[in-house]
Image (cartoon, rainbow, N blue to C red):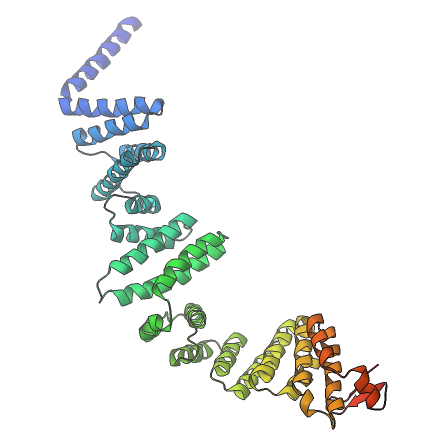
Length: 418
């Protein structure tokens, strides 16, 4: 009885299978056969042959479902990777780009492929740069992006090409985007610890767009009107543009001053006040700049930062105001990592005032002895030797009474002349 039931079940299943097979059309059977043959070629890693079967099958089947398209895309990708003939590789890339387009049309495209797809598009024989740009932007800006150095370089390079090809009325918007994306991508490169080369590639194309003040200032007001309103985002954007104008030597422009004033309004911090001091320096308002640096110094308790700000003040006194006596006094009070540089400035102050310090030529020459001592303390042996050579000779010492020391009234010090 059990055997009879088993035979009946087997006959029922076989009949159902035959009936099902009979219900398939010739097209359906050929569709399955193409996919089967593709699978067989994949077993032996014959990707080119598998690709051919998938391409034939797609036409016969009238398209695939997501699973089969995923297999087809993976197969063509492997074919491209292993193909050595340039012409064939190019043809396979064009084929893959077309497959991606059809998956999108059929609603089975996976956005996880955005970056790979965009990279294939820009390698195609007729690249759709606008589509590649859309895909790169979506893939790179999404949270937790898997973008590599290559993706970032290709994205910016493609954007640069779109800018160069754009109509005149479209260029300002594209330029603004290139600038904005430069800052965003630079931060991404830094955060991800990518190579210096990645940043250099970005900067090369960026400098092809923004070469000088004339390339950025006419559009800056428009950029400022579109700055984000959220405080931290706006602060970051303003700081980026300040850095850009500084790099392009635009610090004397009214636009630079507008950015500084904007920064102080939204971020009255030590960094903003320092930026204001730099602006005042560039405008040759040295007393105001020194005042701003002193304000900044009062905003921090960090000893190293205080030393840095004191040094900035010292440089203005010496280099811009030629206030050698004030600079000398400030230099002697310097500490920290700027002490040596400050002592060098003190030596230069003494040397610069030598001809006006002393009642005789001999006394004036003795200033160079003191300048040499300060240069030695600064670790500037070459400068010290230069100053000693300008000091009095032993004959001059003898002719002036042969004293072993001389007091320098300008500096309140006594130096040895022996």
